Amino acid sequence: MEINRLRMLSVVLCHVGMCLSAFSTQAQMITLGDAVALAHKSNPQLLGAEANLDAAKARVRQAFSQMMPQLSASATANWYHRNYETQGLFGSDDISHYPGQGVQFNLSQPIWRRANSIAVSQARATAGQSRFELEAAEEDMLVALAQSWFDVMAAQDSVIAAKATVDTTQSELAQQEKAAQLQLSASPDLEQSRSKFEQAVAQLAAARGDLEEKFANLEDIVGSIDTFPVPALAASYATPNGDVSQLDGLLNNIDNTNPNVLAAQEVFRAADAEVRKQRAGSEPTLDLVGAYSRNKQGSGNFPGQSAYDIKQSSVGLQLSIPLFSSGLQHAKVDEAMALRRKAQQDTITAARTARSNGKIAWFRWHTNQIQLKAALQTVKSAELDMQTATQAATTGLKSETDRLESRQHYLEAWRDLQKIRYDSIVNFFRIKAVTGDLHDKDLIALDSFLHQRTQEAAQSETGGLSNGVE
Image 1: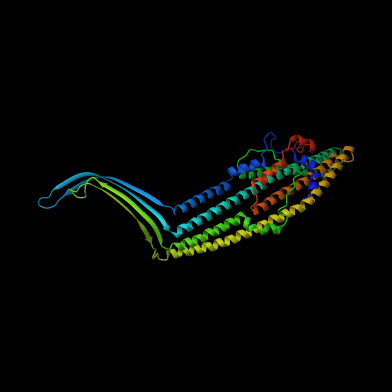
Image 2: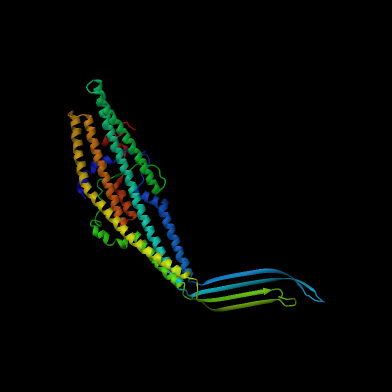
């Protein structure tokens, strides 16, 4: 990891990393811990996964309730108006008014409903799926947040390097203009210097626009935030590699730890339970049933009959045997079996995708480690060049433009080194996410290695990168 060489450059890199942010330094810097907290509160994908888990837990309670006693009650209250006419020679009319009330309770307790017990295990598998999907959503959010966060830092580094290019080309243009005035330089040289300067200004504008875009991408994850000074990564930080140094060790247990694979396995369990549940639809069911009713009426059903109050209760067993459903239940079983085959293939796909993502992240991280060595050497060489040019400019052996050009090359090398370090961190997080081992604390731990860039440090250590060019 070249920790010692990183520490060797710690002072220089820290000073350069504290260059002026594109935003007001009066604003309070947001930490990664703050960003993680904001994402947990406002990220729609994560909140949607949490809501889906809540719904799955409710479905478990629903399935379990189908195995418990079911009690219902009904009541009626009526007012009757009866006009009773008798036919024949001596027919008569009888008009009466009387009330009627009734109440009924029904109790049912499943004794044997195999489909209900299977539905409970199916609901639990679905809840397990939602739980693993939430874990995957959390890890995806953390990876996306880390990527977006370091994209912002890399964009700020590019602004710093672009400002240095403007400084260099502006100094060269000033020399060419002075030489042209003294007729020591041809017009094409002046126009070429002016062209380089305009291109540098355009690149600086593009770098600042890219920084704004990266801030907008960060807001997609954490929600609307005020602009804040972009932090710098301390040169003393080195990406840990103790648990991911060997690819075989990473892949050996990925099927048992990757949340997407585990979610797919729960989907298969739920699909298998659906097959068993549909097959149970052709089996007999047995319930314990009970009823109690009371009917009260202010008059009999015929004239002259007395009012009555009837109480009745019953308890017994109810057996239901499906005999013929025109092939409906068999079709449901066939459908469930087909969906189970699909879930099985989806599980294989999830496992292959996890292994592929793990390999890609590992190889990228491994490449970053190799690139880091070369970038460190490039920065070291550029630093020595800059120191030599600065001393030569002080004694008059080199021009100010030469000094600025060496400084520009150093900052470009530093920018490339920082980008490799950012990529290494993000790819390390991707590896941990694939193995289901990425947590909030992994990102929050980086806060101790992030420090605020200050205007004073930027001006003293880099001579003022903007040089009046905004």
